[in-house]
Length: 142
Image (cartoon, rainbow, N blue to C red; front, side, top):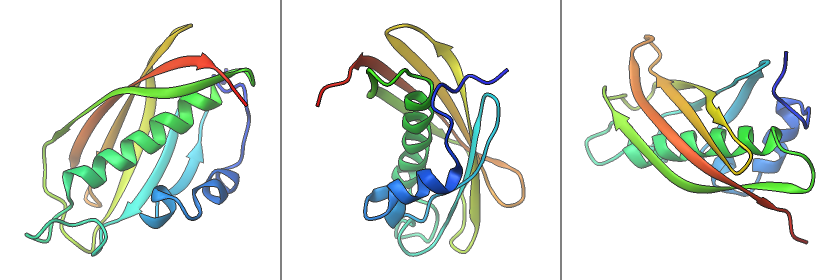
């Protein structure tokens, strides 16, 4: 059974990314499953810190992007999801030239808050980062 109230194709989400940070970072939605979103992101000059490895902030952008999109897709049209808090644990370096894959799933789908966990893996499958995003569910305006 699907958790999504707003069915959408990955290409539609990517079109919304155009000209914004997720689009500039090259985040691609690969799959929307019954209770998850899977995406990938290249690790190139846009994403690395001075030592040539993935910047932790770039991992957070990926995680917040997926969690925010996922949260929004679970809500009725008269509600919006806004970020409250995000954290990330970086557990393995990712070298420039790699591509990371992220899987985002809900931990809590409440009436006023949601919690989403994103695991980011290196190309070799090793866990690079785990992040948790809390969103507030608010009334849509405008």
